[in-house]
Image (cartoon, rainbow, N blue to C red):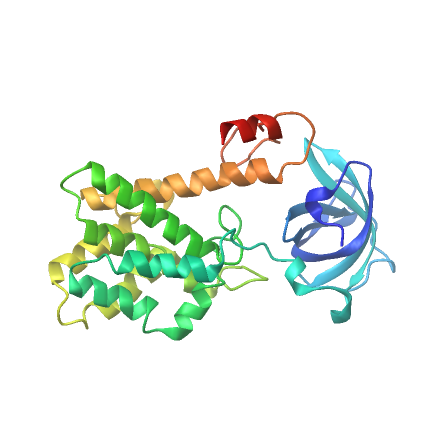
Length: 320
């Protein structure tokens, strides 16, 4: 198995890869071609199929396919030009080669989540969080594998759990610096802020939006999930529940970023900033880790609108 992270310019590649995306495109000349996104556990690459014919067999998005192609650099990024393609047979590949996972195991991350939950002193809030992460076995099993996004950040097995734990740690650190913050709300809000993504996004390999996700989005879904359970917990203060619901509704920070409300409590503001920090820094980390071009600078990052400096091994080790 030749992993994507090891591809070099001008290399012929024959191997099996996950087809993450498939689009039929039309050139200005009227000729049709395919634009694919291929993935394995080490990264992803755009693949172009310029000539459609009997050498290109039938396949669907979300399947493992065998390709024969050659790499090149286009606009600073590695790209594949595919000449032959077919659907892979189950015995030809190992499933574990195709899905990125969190650097820490899902079980370790889950134990950290439970550790944060046990720090909640208000028993009403703790019982609410427990209703998701202790009592709901089906939800827990899905959480252990679920991505946090389609493509932007933490879009791999265990990504949602990793993001949730990371945001909780960042938010707690911030809360320690500002006395009006309520640590119980901070923990509960951080642990539950993206709970709606379990229903917004379909599990891997497709990792696509569900109908509910397309129509409502994870913020609205998460609010409903928390509200429906929260009102049934006798020892949960309605005032605390309302503040927690506000944190979920406001965690994208700005109306133009899809937030139904802007943060209007210090706890909501802390959650927004922790969530933003983790998502942005993960994008930077991924941009550096997955860029295999020559030189010290990554390809242009379309979402963040810049390139990033890639330290070499010696300077990186020295910094550590």
